[in-house]
Amino acid sequence: MPDSSADLLAAVADCIGPELAEVEKLFHLELASGFKCVDALVRHVSRFRGKMLRPMLVLLTGKACGKLTPSHITIATVVEMVHMATLVHDDVLDEAELRRKGATINHLRGNESAVLLGDYLISHSYHLCSSLDSQMASRAIARTTNQVCEGELLQIDNRNNLDLDEKTYTQIITHKTAVLCAACCQLGATLAGASADTISRMERFGLSLGIAFQIQDDILDILGHTSQVGKTLGIDIEKGKMTLPMIHFMKTAPREHRELLRSLLTIHEPDQVEKIRNLILPSDSIDYARNQARQYTQQARRSIAGLPDSPAKDVLDAMADFVICRTI
Image (cartoon, rainbow, N blue to C red; front, top):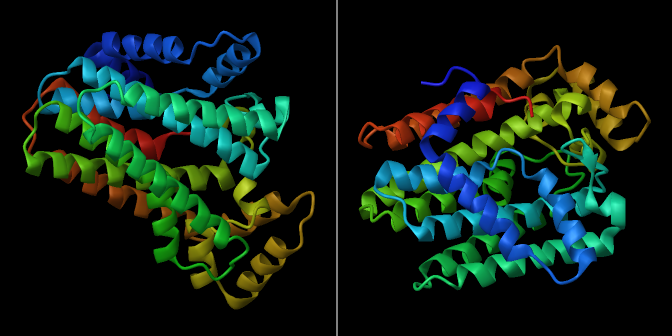
């Protein structure tokens, strides 16, 4: 069982390293353009790819449930394109300037180029997905991207809703983040020929893992440091997005502290993020959010408990720890 992120990456490389290299190759081959300006944007956005969590989920799930096929490589590439498109569009919505310690496309080239590049990535993902004999995967990817958009629209509809409840927050992050992780695991298991019960359990694994991942992301938006996390932080606060630590604080903190948080969220100041961080840190709201994330990772582990022992299963199990302990 890997004990650190470095150990986890080494375990991933041992388990699916050659297949991840094929995904990398197909990603660049599929997105190649005859126009230098397009190639330049694709090269730049490729810097954002980082962990490749979603392709890993496709490949590891497939290997844990059976044998990997060329279709796994295709789908792993498709989900990475979809994910990259959501990052590019998210940066436009958030007016973010930094991602993975580099300038975002919208900051570098403007919103028009960023929106069109996101569309370019999405259209190529469907083009590649349609190369598979079965339309099952195309329908699953289409359904998932629809759900991601629903999650984003629900979040926008609740901007500056300082009374957002935890149930609605969970709906938002389930749709905007977790459903794509769930689809990765569902498709990985399906393409490996797994039983209907196993496919369902793998889908639950991905959903639980994705929710935990987003809760940790929201914690880092409050507590993280830009130099370490590598992207613009405090965006949730600046955009009026209530995340789990703030929702819990609004529900449990003393009245005067809740009123102060409302005031800080309403009146934008240069040191707004720092003041909110200092207000929330002494409370138990960060610990509450971490415990919720931990509960979801425990659910994820239970979902794969019945799989046969294998290196792929071990890595999937270790990923549950990674998503809630990561600092990037």
